[in-house]
Length: 165
Image (cartoon, rainbow, N blue to C red; front, side, top):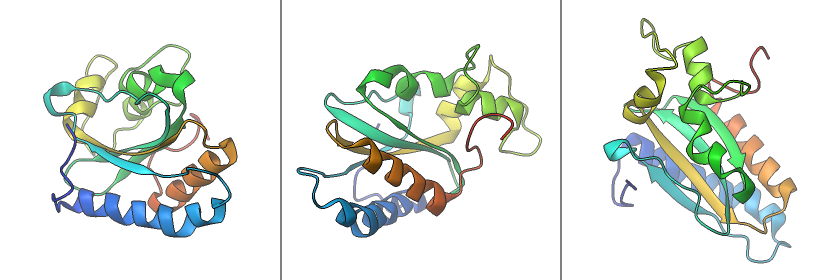
């Protein structure tokens, strides 16, 4: 479920401040890219639902703990990686080490909470909120990389990079 723009939760405020940061500090540097606009989406996982990437869009996605503003993961995805956006981060998958689910199973974000590959999917849906920034599919990779790096710098996610780094 999407949060309504009138919601003033701390996470919604964080999302709005980050959208302003993106628009004011980053997008202006790429003004030569036609049609570059960013749409913000805050996803609550209500009813256990997982978002899908809208057609003709790329995204910078992020996971945040419910109830506080701790950022867990920031990443980017294009249309060719729909499964990364909607499936990989919610499940421990053999051969994929840089997913939210595997990171949480390796090191829980909450002291005393131990999660397993069998329990992590539901835990993510119940305990996280996503803030996604949707961009046109034509957005150059350099822009995507810059936006992702800016949000990583701004939010300092707990799980960043590949396992062991």
